Length: 257
Ligand code: CAA
Image (cartoon, rainbow, N blue to C red; front, side, top):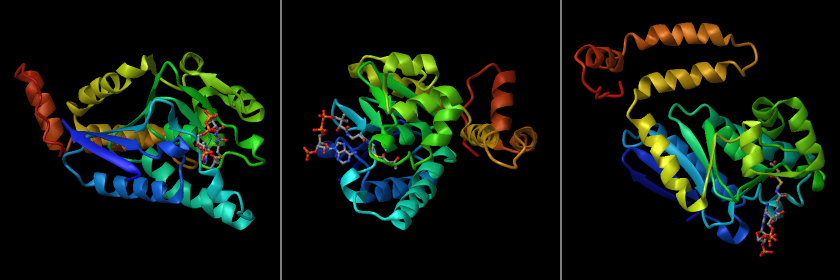
């Protein structure tokens, strides 16, 4: 019940569904998300995933504060470590594109979830921020790292220190979201981008995700990953189909292998 999954035209629309708590991330919802991505990995019916929040007010209003209010340091550390491993890093390294359609508040763990996705669209009413320091904690689902990667260190420092919220247009100016559209258009607009992606080679896209992410991994040389994955692409059926279709002046029908 925490997660509504609708699959159509190879696009999985995944709606986080705890509207009574503005879709805050509790343990059950995080477990459901983790299980969804494990299953979606091997599901040929899914080529692109879109994450959004139920209702018109909120994408996700953060980690569920009621759940961790009595935690001690060790439990806090485990909450962050398990969340990062089972959900946030899993999404970032997922081999199919994951797009966040930010339809309202994306705060704390909610913005961290959107930032773990490969890119973001937003509705005009969206508000984003990392307000954790108002609770006496810091972002724990990768926010200190990914916000700085996406908007630069100075802006990340200010946003986290002030716990300020930025609107969708500012988020676009910062490079945090790629597009801003009216709320009623957000899902169709995002599905439009997803369909373009779904028509391309899923094998090549998976290799591109790995190469782009390699730039942000300690001890990994992104250029070397790119060279390796470029070479590996040549052995795929998608490569054969893509190049043959070009030479035959027709649209490629990628088998995804
Ligand atoms: N956790 C649990 N419940 C939450 C929640 C959260 N993060 N955010 C909202 N809710 C609940 C509220 O408690 C309220 O429930 P009740 O009706 O039972 O009281 C319901 O959702 C509606 O919220 P509000 O009445 O507060 O709605 P509002 O319109 O007045 O305010 C808001 C909206 C500004 C988003 C406000 O709800 C808010 O500030 N939420 C908390 C945001 C936050 O601090 N997020 C960071 C969490 S910490 C974190 O994420 C740690 C990490 O990095 C791992």
